[in-house]
Image (cartoon, rainbow, N blue to C red; front, side):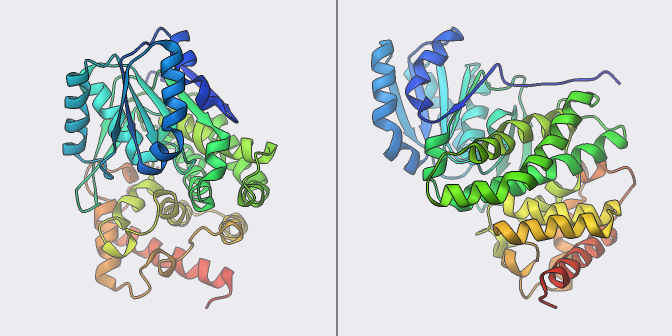
Amino acid sequence: MHRVFCAPLRYVQGDGVTGRLALEMAVLGIHGPVLVVAGRSAAAALAPVWAAAMSAAGWHHHVRAFGGECTAAEIDAVAAEARALDARAIVGAGGGKCLDASRAAAAAVGLPFVSCPTVASTDAPTSALSVVYTAAGAAESYRIHGRNPDLVLVDSGVIVRAPVRYLVAGMGDALSTWYEGRAAAAAGRPNMRGGGTTEAALALARACRDTVLADGEAALAAARDQRVTPAVERIIEANTLLSGLGFESAGLAAAHAVHNGLTVLSGTHAALHGEKVAFGTLVQMVLDGTPADEFATVVRFCLAVGLPVTLAQLGLAAATTADVDAIAGRATQPGETIHNLPRPVTVADVAAAIREADGLAAEIAGWS
């Protein structure tokens, strides 16, 4: 199998870089008019900065409010608005779902895409992948586009002003990168771009996990005070760049499939993507036969920063056997990334691993 490594054309991170948006776009040959698709809080905080940047460049721009869910209908609506504006680029500004919808719309109309995350809660900003949900919030499908974002611009000052829960959720998403990429590579499975895994991708995936474990607690402490510190910058990079490059070019496996399974139960809908992925990582570690001391290290880290390690913490305190089977059934449906594991797994295997991960984590936490 040929090896494939994919990445954005340009990545810019730092405190206050939102003011450089038009400049960084122009460096890449991207010009206005620009459609900005923004979450509510992103628009409230950054609209004046975008206006100043676009005005200085002499570009017309329009800000569209993101509908809140990355559905097929939302993607189509953004694409239609870009056509009506005669836009030459789409900028997505907000959380992962806003970026995914904006990215999919840009792909649909053949425009450059600029990714401006306002939280470091997922590895969505750098990728060419959109996760499409139903209007009810259940994961429905993946759309893999032909190209990564032209520009990823991450304003660290914006990130630390967001609720710290999002930064922590990003750590949960990032933790999975090494375990999933390693499993997919060991199985000889193609990565998210249909190629084999490069050594570079695996090195980035490992660095992602190691950075999160080393700097996560210090970054959380600084972010609570809205301070941009070296630890915060490293965690933002791990959550956004290392995790994004790692998952896309190394591959996904069980952790994200379990996340998708969890979305079928409405009790989990209040949990963020990375929070569900964190629990999915524990389930994958059980399926992988990870040594007990390594499993305990990850659980204790999650507890230290506030990531969920049990079903109860995800809103499923009264989970029944049927509930667990439903999670496992969705996680193992045909085409799911759990089939990138080095061995076949069944619904029963995954259901058992969910219960075991839940029980072991509760025991480590002293709750059982």
